[in-house]
Image (cartoon, rainbow, N blue to C red; front, side):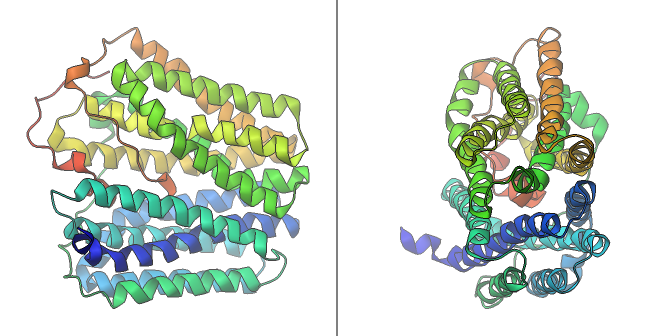
Length: 421
C-alpha cells in the first residue's frame, strides 16, 4: 500500500519546504515592518500586492509552464521567491516590499500550480481522495510550522529572511530530482462572473466577502498582535491556532451542512465570526492568553466559510463543472483578499488595533445577511442531490489546479443543472 504513494513523496517534501517558507515570510514581513515603524496601511498593502500577484499567477503561469516545462518553471518560481525573500532582508523599505510582494504572489501561484498538477497526474482514481487528504495535511502543517519559526528568531535582524531563502531553495531539490513523468500542460484558468453568479449568488458573494475578511486577518493579524503588545511567540501561536481551529471545525460544520440547508450553516458561522470579531473590538484585551483564545474561536468560524460556500456552489452545478466553478470562486476569493488588507489597514491607522475586526465583522455580517435573503428566495437543494462536503486546503496555498486533484472533480455525469440559489 505504501509503495503506491512513494512516487508523490518527493513532491510533498518540496511542497512542505515551499509552504514553510511562504508561511514564515508572510508573518515575518508585517512584524519587521511594524518594528520599523511602517504605517499599518502600507503593511496592509503587502497583502493586497501578494494577492494581486497570486491571482495574476493563476491566470498567466500556465502559459509559462507550457513554454518551458514543469521542472524549469518550478525552478524559476522557487529561485525567484528565494531571491525576493533575501532582497526583503537587505532592503528595508515599505515601497520596495510592496512591489516585491507582487512578484512573490506570482511565483507562489506558479509553483503551487506545478506541484498540484504533478500530484494530480500521479494520483489514480483509487487513491485520489487519500492523496488530496495528505496534500491538505502537508499544506496546513507546513504553513503553521513556517509561522512558528518566527518565534525562534529575532525579527529585527536578517537571519529569518535568510532562513526563508534557504527553505525556498530546499523546495527545489526534491522536486527537480524527482523521477516522476512530466505531467500534461497546465490548463488555463478563466473567470465567468455571470455564470458563477447564475449558478449560485450566495457562493459568489460569499467567496468575495470571505476573501475580504481572511485577507485582512491573514495580512494584519500579526500587526494587531504586535500593536497590542503580545510577544512574537504569542503572535506566531495566535496565527497558527486560528488556522488549526478552522481546520478542526470544518468536519462538524461540513457534516451539519450535509444534513440541512448549507446556507443556514454558512449564515450561522458568518454570524458567529462577526460576533466574535465585535467582541474582540469591544473588549480590547491585552492579555496574550485571552487574545489567543478569542482569535482561535474566531478562526474556527471564519475559516470554514470558504469551504461551505464552495460546497454550496457545487450543489447547484453539474458534476463536470466542479473545477470550473470552484476555480472561478477561488479567483473571486483572491480579488476579495486584495480589498481586505487595504480597508483593515486604514481603519487600524485611524482608530485602534482592534479595528481590524471591524473589517472582518462587516464582511461576515454582509455574508450572513445576503445568505438569509437568498434563503427566502430559493428552495434548498434536496439532501440526496447534494455533493458531500469536502474540506479545502488553506486558500492562500491553493490554486485552481488543485481542484483537479479533488475527487469531486472526477465525478461522472451529474444530474444536470439545478436551480441557482
